[in-house]
Amino acid sequence: MKKKIDAHFIAIMGLLIGLMVVLSQILGFETQLLKITFDFIPEVVMASLFGPFWTAVGASIADIIGNTILGKAPFFIGFTLNSFIAGLIYGSFFYKKPITVKNAFLCVLCNTLLISLCLTPIWLSMMYGIPLTDAKLWGIRLLKAVIMLPVQTGLIVFFGNALPFKRFAKSMV
View (spheres, rainbow, N blue to C red):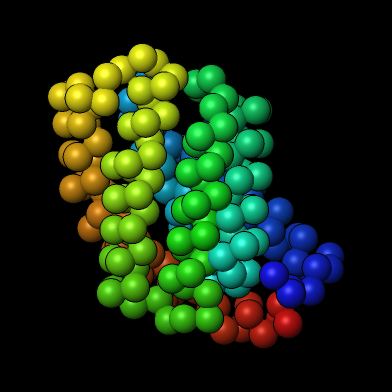
């Protein structure tokens, strides 16, 4: 949390937050029970550069801005909590650590188990009155988890090794 907050820090955070909003709200796919986005890519960049706390804050801001301006569903604070927790997880796995297949897989697995398969069904149940035992809810969530686990892992490793994080990190100090 002892990160130097200056114009460069704010500009990079703003850029990454804006990219998360675009990838989530404009280029994402969303139905009442399912949302597939690629906003995790700038979130990994944020996590690598700023750590768990600032990534959690940035992800929460992106969620609030995206849902306020471009939201396709009603705003629900539980999903902002999901964003905060996901930011903490990404930051814990990637801040000052190499982006490896193992780290990426474990990070995506933690996010999938905690957020996609535990918290999100609770929020959807609260919002739409869907019983937690509903087979349709779980079928969609499990299918998404099985498909997105290798996709997210592969994209994180690809972009994580394609971007010069060490050079960016040195300019942040």
